[in-house]
Length: 635
Ligand code: 7RM
Image: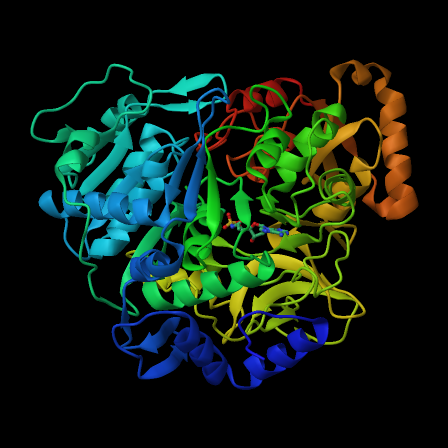
């Protein structure tokens, strides 16, 4: 039986053992059997974990868009590659077959070439969730240009910093974008950024909202007229396996954003393989991931992974709450979605609302549901499993990072039995280990530690653009010879992994290590609580004490504040122990979250510690105003 599609638990264990014993043979087989190459590689992998050097499929030649598009044309040319579902439910959906996608990507590739973009040039893409975003990325890959997608919710300052860090020659943007009831004037924001980006020579502008924009002569052009004149066929650039595919910025806990660099062949092989197995994609399925393409989840599991498998992938422009809280469920019903992949934050925000929003829709097309981005707490897991998956769809909790390129730990549906809040088992080729602070490996089960990966996998990031030393220092120095993820994990009695959260979120209270995530889980069990975040504050005796920011389901529930505080602490005492009780509880209207749903704990920490300013860059928050509100009402 082939190792490409895993069929049973027994098959998984067999494939896993083989992948670990003979990784070269394992990945070589997958690369050879499932992709088209101009020239075969000479060696599957060469690496140095100290110096963080990785070469996968050495001297192999290929183009990823040949694999995403061209090779499907013979059999799947009329199949939908992309279904675009607009923000406004009354605007018709747009469908792109693989044949049409080939033409659109070719036109765009020809425009880019005409505008002087060459192999190795960086092209910044600052677009809303519209098909042109996917087409622009693929067009870059077609001609060997390196795309650097910047999420369209980022500010002018964040955009210019990212453009300058990797000196992009071109910016592709839009007049504006829709997000729920709001319109975002993207070109106007881009103009502000462009006043500080000397490397940008050309700006191509997609018309989406039709709003008035200013166009700078020589530099700015509308994209559509150029596309109309361009030829609908194109030659794909021959790329070396290790030539860059894209840069994607991820914010570190300190300092400027890190431009994670991913290369061509390893990324292709790994995202294709993991997509196929983790979503159990079958040829007629419709797959939908609600992330924004501006994040790694969108790169790997809206665009590349699905197209590499000839899948139909939904691109959704909107948000879960517009025009009302049933939007996700309505889209699933409308397009008969088979695999649905979203974040715990989205689930928690929808679980707060009336159950009728979900129950009004037919979700029987669903076969697999997935979660990504943060630990999924017990309550959210059950709500998602019961009301969306109807207790019949496996729920895959997928753990990975921008740096890992693809999912490393996840259940495989219909293969791995799921367990609430556990990402479960490593995928083939992935060797997780738990380490303690003294650099010893923690062996045995029912243990927690810092999660590291012992052996490289094809999609591991190759460097931080322009700063390889920072790449080594951040990921390969703390545990020499291993990749350090920055996350903590628990390994249960059968070897399942539960990601407990960033290890920098661990707080030591009276000498006890307390992860914030499990305490937050317990708090969420209180019927009034929507979500919470815990940080440490200095304490004279205990070293640290816990300060909890708690969001209630309805603000009216605040009134009985003291009683609520008692009940929350009683829950914690009952389930974790009195040591984990909260010293202070502040009820808030919301938490400071980034667009990808991550709580910015550094801000909460500062507020809890009594600081009044210096909250750092808050431009990446969904709602920057919440910071001041929380600060004012500090307890
Ligand atoms: C895919 C993505 C990476 C960080 C990672 C974790 C957290 C992601 C899970 C998760 C628990 C999960 N990339 N994380 N997935 N924690 N369970 N299933 O989110 O670069 O933006 O973030 O996200 O802390 O280190 S990312």
